[in-house]
Length: 407
Image: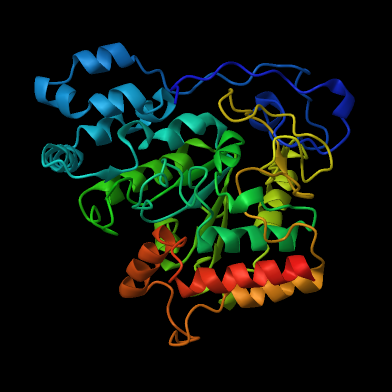
């Protein structure tokens, strides 16, 4: 995957009065909605310049030989918009110890996920100045061809894990026009390209060993990234915190400036306790629209040829420069390498799927805490092995999906 993206084109004037998903960077980041009586900025005015001047070459030259060796990945693959604010953190004793640990893992021939060049892909898909919303995850998937640096997202042709399928159901409940991707896919890069920062708590994991890199230093680093968003994006963004661990990470966020949406985790262990009906995807867009106008709407669609707004999104497709503008509050109709649960089904069918997907195994306590460590570890293993025929959760979901299709 190339670390650089080509510049994209602006949306056509024809759609000016329609809700535009992911429009120009100027329209979203140039200024909030003007108050009555306030002077209106010139049409087409460029976005404000970055507030932090960062001379990367000079910074690199100031590093010691060991620091340069340990931080090669950060120097080469962490987007400069983020590195400018995290440069002090990456030279901290805690982070350097983390890098020494990862170096030993590599030298021991341990298989680490995601692949090295994808560890910071979240920073390149969503540069700091483009962040509109933040979705917080926990541990990367720990099987082959899954983790690629964005929480909840998996590479094609890998199928969407159970938690992601539940996320699709939540979107469908908010935007009935949303169509889950074909072939049960789960690639969420389009969201990242539209300004949704998708950040895990830990950024690496040893193959087939959930939470194996927990408490090694990633938690502190990713907390710094969250704090940076809260500090730098002064006009406000939306934080979506699902589960107690995520809620703790945004506890210090200024709720007068930002919107914090909290809920149970979309895991099958807890989704039935409020995730499906939390309305987060629509609430996110409503807040952004109220704060910035319709140009700020996020199109949650995953099909580059469709939009939840009923028209093709004015954004680049995967691999091109990300659009840095509008968000979306209407409908979701995008397809991508996602799941097919809701395609062509009516509301009754969706409710049936919603109820059924939350049924995992017979011995799960209906009131179980989704943040129980053992449960989370079991979930992580199940998420990675969801395609195995002996995984009861997946088998039940597939049966229900097939039944809905037949009906």
